[in-house]
Image (cartoon, rainbow, N blue to C red; front, side, top):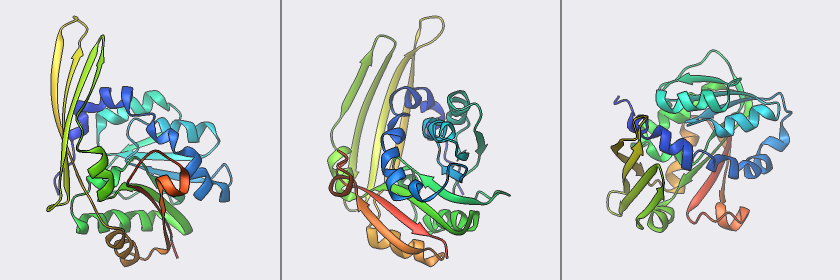
Length: 244
């Protein structure tokens, strides 16, 4: 199993410009799951990134554990949420001693899992980590989301950092590729360049439901970001499933 390391060289830029996105969907998480659990609930934050969501949940009194395969992302996570537990691990193979009442994965993190068999491994590990009647909530980009957001280049230009993003979506292979070039200033005021390639796969709702059911999840539901939550994210779907 190839280790996913693409975010190591991208962690600083991600933390600065994208790390806050999961907090914007916190009201959605509260509506579809958190309102049913007390504040001392044990939450597993899969692909926790730079930890902003975990920090906010910890402030609210939840007992959060975050896992991510990128040590550099976790470095920022520990700065953003110093009292939260973070564990370096791959979501396709993780195994923890603790059990959790709720598991999250946000900001289309699971689209980075490129094979349906590996997605099944992820779901299976989540299932085993949940308590009975535990709830798993995650969002993913569906094909309309990739066609809407991954076909338009954009740039971020600030005094000390430049980010250039060029991405495309292959309809036949169902693969989206983001080519990200960053220029950042180091301590000597010299510019450093990093090139990162991020790849995501588009799954259908049927594929996701079938894979969830194959490991034992029940009560499968899907919500549309725009229609159900008025979130300006075309093609983003939120899934909710429960352990028997």
